[in-house]
Amino acid sequence: MLVLRIVLVVHLALLTAYTAVVIGNHGWNLMPVFFGDMAAMAWPGQFNLDFTGFLALSALWTAWRNNFSALGLLLAVVAFFGGMMFLSVYVLILSLKARDIQEILLGSAAR
Image (cartoon, rainbow, N blue to C red; front, side, top):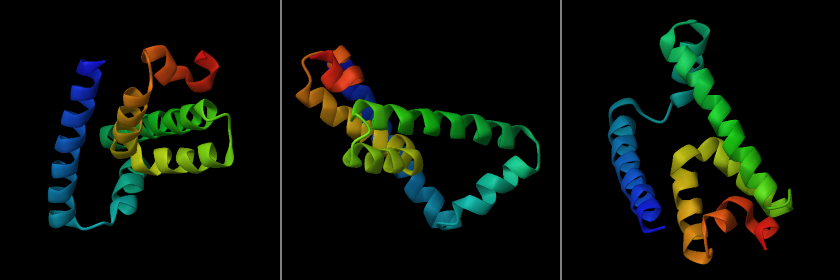
């Protein structure tokens, strides 16, 4: 569990620093670039489409883990748009509360 927590914290720190530099250089206007790459039908767009699938899977897992409750659906939206910035914090918090990895993955279903 310690290794998981270290990976989450390191990735969050790196991603936060990288994101700050990108925002500083290019601003907050991600959507036209993101969807523009997809519309161009090139490798950056293929990556973005693949990444969108991971975001959707993350959101679905988050909602499912919370039994599709109102909070779970809200967290799912945050998971979809927040990506790893959200998921690293969410899983880190879950890891501090859980007994084992199964409880992190399954939530109340593991009990």
